Length: 321
Image (cartoon, rainbow, N blue to C red; front, side):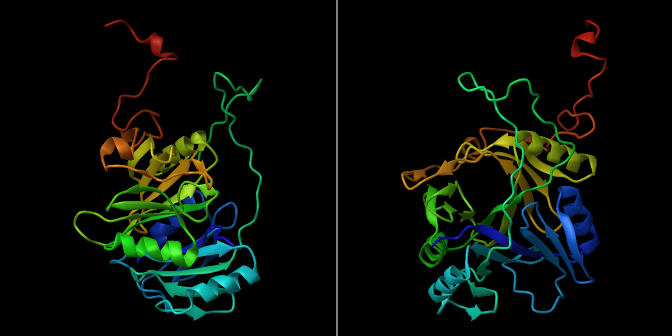
């Protein structure tokens, strides 16, 4: 019995028209729309709900809007859902609904488990030729004009009580620690076998709680780049990226979201098993990013923001100084 990943998140924001445009540009499909709620889906059916703060029955947020209101995790069957509900029983705010079990984590964030609605998909992805392994033969790597995210891969939350919150997810939902910033952060994955992290809990020096970012998995590095440049062309602000996280090995691009904090495209994270031993790191810029582009790449010039656009057919066509 294990949690499979994130099935649904709910965000809250007053400016629904801007959020509608943002997440359509981000590459999600708008599947439902009303005056108080937008419902988007990724390629595999993972849902992103953006609700107006005045929508009835909206769970409380960890901070002022716009922010995250709820995370629903997935399991594989009704029988497993019943078992998760039994483990959640007695937690603050526990409620057994027809299709899911709900409670609050130690921060007060509404979280739950449901039988997954996500569908299995098989997507063509870029093959990478290395010195010793060359699977891409007589075939160019893909280029993407925009991204279409596969799913919500992880969420990152600020917490005032790292140990208590981390222990809740380990003991109640069976999460496993992948790596640590001792006393500062825990990278948690849903099960012993899986991607590097589905949840990252971060305790900053000045105690606070809230949303840091929501991360969306895409196919490969080329889609990270294509998606980030498309968001740039559409006028959205890049915070950082492209870049690479040395702890998870993931390649990333962060964009400022009108629904709260940041959203991230990422790919190529480490895959872990029971044999993995958690490592400990001291926070620092080079630990967060092996390399990164501040402010992103301009989608029109295809160069770093504010860099001079290339001229001529080839860079070598430039006249000598």
